[in-house]
Amino acid sequence: MPSAMHSPLGRFRQHGRRHIAAIVVLVLIMASPFFLMDARAQLAWTAASLVSGASKPCRWRGGMLPRRAGGQLDVFQWLQGLGSWGRRSELKGKFLNLIEKSNYGIVPFSVADKEGFDSLVEELSGLSPTPEPARSPLFSGEWKLLWTTEQELLFSIDKGLFGLACTGSTQSIDAVSGTLENRILFEEDSYLRVGSSLAPDEADGKRFNFKFSSCSLKWKNFEVPLPPVGAGWGELVYLDEDLRIQRDSRCAILVASKM
Image (tube, rainbow, N blue to C red; front, side, top):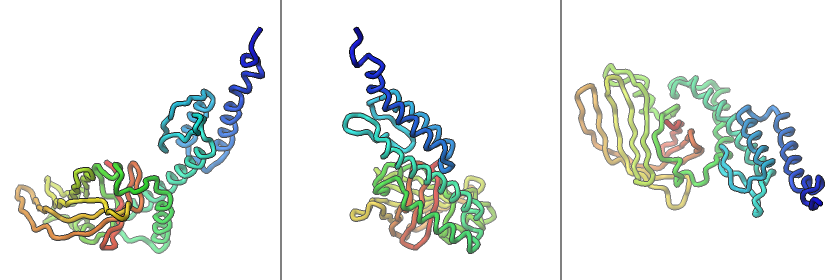
């Protein structure tokens, strides 16, 4: 005679609630135009996790899936995190499209675009997924400039270097070793390179302090050292796996993407 656990009612009690939760989640989210297709695909994957009842932590693009002490997926906490992730993705798309039209910041925003820019930065700042970003490993890596208000940088990008056009600007950041290198790149392997020391601010997890330590200018086959003069701080307004928005002590704003 089958046990109560193996009876249809027992199997429903054991597995039916997970199936119902998965169906409810799918219906609610798939019916909403708020979520992008990528988010919906992740949702379907997580619904499968609900059905299978996997007790081990699973990863999705928003990080570790939240689970209760007993190992069950915390659906409501997960939905809240997915909502923030979906909203961030939507805002990032709008933000990147807006700054692309500005050619690194050389082309001024219209009044409407400036208001849109400020609004997007403010909302993204509130949705930044990285606590204490200046201490996060996401801060380290190779970064490419997308947009800035720093006038010296914009001048070099716009005017080039003694007849050589600018081809971009990059940064190498190693928060562990405490180094930062800025490079403005030009044709024919030419560049302006500035090296700095870097350290997280002791009081504010969003800020880091830097001090220039080296500088060199290369034009074609000629390279000359320049005096490294300057120090300040930067504040990471937004940081995730591939986007960084930063303000600094000179009130300049910088937007960079992970290479």
